[in-house]
Length: 194
Image (tube, rainbow, N blue to C red):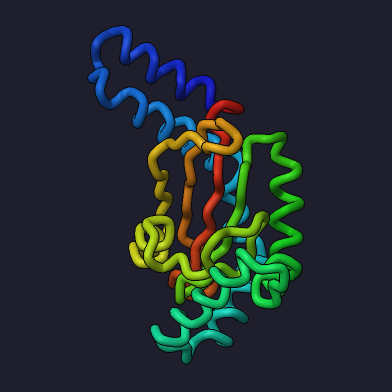
């Protein structure tokens, strides 16, 4: 399916149907969406992810913006420190272990996984991120805030450390009983591997 999507885009380019300026953006979005639809979309219904989000939303429901700033500041300080109690509590939880397992089984195509709750806080990560609060980023704003059944693919970027071309795809996660958004998941996709 992914190869078919790429072939169709390349055919459109060669036939002059797709403007050259939009090709790079369109190609990566189409390829990432095809990969997500084939391999990842079922994860948003995983009962372990849904349960972790419901628990986190209940636990974090009374956090104020000031509380979130304080927690995010603590995370950023721990990111550069030896002692990492807040970061460790996330990276060592059952959800993060499950995400690392899913990443390991993706044959190098998935570069990172993160689940964010209704406040935009990272509640599970396959790898440590530099900040705890994702609520100011498009991956959360263009999914959780946009409603159910949303997939957002961000622009392709080259990772300076790995020299890998990658893009993040984010999806809204909804409560299976009510259909209401309860969080979001972000999947880093290695475009070179696609």
